[in-house]
Amino acid sequence: MQIENLNLNYGAVAPEIIAAVTGVISMLVDALSPKGARKTNAVISLVGLVLALLAVVRLEPSGSYFGGMVTTDPVRVFFSVIILLVAIIAVLLAGQFLRDEGLPPGEFFTLIMFATTGMLLLASAGDLVTVFLGLEIASITTYVMAGYRRYDVRANESSLKYFLLGSFSTAFMLYGMALTYGATGNTNIAAIRAIIGEGRVEHPALLLIGAAMMLVGFGFKIASAPFHLWTPDVYEGAPTIVTGFMGTGPKAAVFAAFLRVFADGFNVTASPIGAQLQSTWISAVAVIAVLTMTIGNVIAISQKNIKRMLAYSSIAHAGYALVGFVTGDFAPVAFYMLAYSIMSLGAFAVIQLLARAGDQKTEIADYAGIGFETPALSFSLAIFLLSLGGIPPTAGFMSKFFVFKTTWDAAPHYRWLVIAAVVNSIISIYYYLYPIVVMFFRPLAPGFIKPRIATMTTVALILTLVGTFYLGLLPNRLMNALGQGQKAVAIQPRLGDR
Image (cartoon, rainbow, N blue to C red; front, top):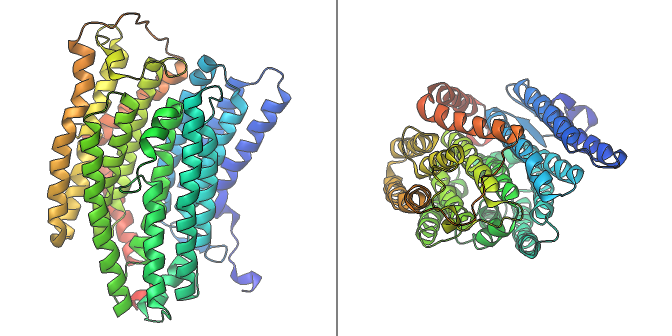
């Protein structure tokens, strides 16, 4: 490819550049500060994330750059906004966590920024190579963050398990990409779609196997069944703030790449192999969605540790989001991931405060009777849990309604999937209500001490509460914007459909 055909545009990767440079600056500030610079690093990180958010908003409506490696479209914009909002809330929460734990601040803020860089790359990926690079950058940083509490055996175990199983799933992903390249002779997602649509796949069996292996890789990263086994142990052992961060931002980023590869690259029926591939992966995703919802909700009922309970809740929510895949639209999935990220981060923020340094108080029984002892935290946690359960008028209800209604209307053959999702949502109400009952209707547990809430933590809680109610009460503006974005994606010329 000639250099003039690469379409180099550094403005198209401005968010990633800003996030990476901010991470480097954070490292330098920490190295030059004899006592560490927790507040300075937090401010630097927040400024960098806000600038990256402004750069995302100013992106061109559509385009392909760097030889198709990076693409700009509504999918990238919406998911990048989700990723940056998650990172901003994580930075707001990090200050009190690092102070209470007595951990070095520079590395932590740097890891958040580099993880954000990888996630932004995933959202902007127009090529399988970019998908892999973004996935690895985001994964390696979260492996380290999971074990950031170095003196804690549980955190070390969490990090090691995540690393070993993550490496195994990465091998599946990479091998699937290699087989897809062998079948189509290209790694660019738009080009792969064109080749499939024109029936120029030289080795159809390789393409089907490659897609299956990538499905396994993506399934691990979003914690869908039966690739979810790492999730409870990693969520329980990692520091609570890390659990909240890696259960939202990276998951949203992987969903963006998942949508781009499967709902775009592999969603073409203009040729026999394309129709076979589309039918196969949609059926597989539907089955995985039912398994994921059911396993997550059923096992969550028996959990006594609130972090493990939310781990299985996260698995179930991955299943709900997968319901939106059968339509091939990104809008319901994007809205769902935004709502889930906000309410899940809010829940983990409260748990971080109640659990104390070292996550000493993470059993549900530890929260007995605290409802009116610390009403700000207990009522906030109750709101987030009710939202996760899908109770109106919260973001959780509206996000489920959007996904289920879209799938019911657009995919009549998969209405059974919507029914299964609704039944699972009803089942989940039990374990979301249990901690609320313990907090407000049980006697106070001995030795309870009211936690002190830092200013930045208060800001993070307010943002998540406002987001939870705003998306539940006034979702129309965002839904309309997502609908317009979906139309823009749909009318873009696709070579495979010509």
